[in-house]
Image (tube, rainbow, N blue to C red):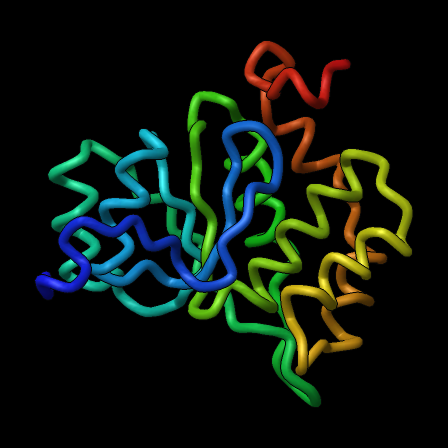
Length: 174
């Protein structure tokens, strides 16, 4: 690690708290590891297709963090779509409080992460206006209408039913 970062806590790009014990952002870099350690994560949920970077694998091992990988391509017109079955599995893992605290990310924390968070917001009964406003805030300047359509059409019932009620986070039970 460079000396200039030795004492700094630097969050990953596009970092934000989504809900209690759920965080989002871009792909962690080595300079972000100290910050992520402070979150005392149990899991990192990644949406990238590629093998997880070696320096991040070492960070996971050192901190006893499990990797949940649900690789998916982003919604890129005209022929690449997020597979709904993979998103259902990712949402189920995100809802399972046994995986919390959890940090979710794709490469930049914008589109795929935005879709996953949008699906969670749908479960939280947010209005579409609020869901899409949050999505656009993180995906700017390149919001994708196909992502917003995916969120709108996503059926959360299979993801919710895959998690035992006793393992759902408290913020969904109130």
